[in-house]
Length: 88
Image: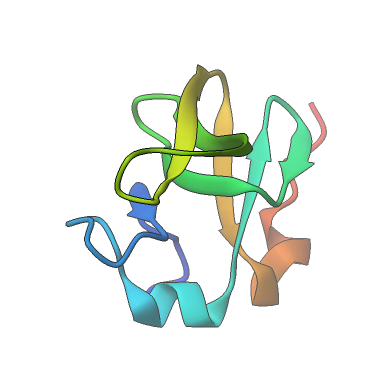
């Protein structure tokens, strides 16, 4: 398995971007310099994350999500110390 996380990942098993092996390994997401633990889906190349909006649900029972744009950095939790950005 690669040491770089996927560019696009979703936690919803119905999504084409869902990868159970990667999720079991553990993924961390840093959004605009802040560690986020409530990310439903992310895309590093497009610069967005989807986060749950409160406890609201759609008509199918899925959590309502909101897409937020910004700087996205994804990393594996087992190599977190290696993923820290270098000082400039």
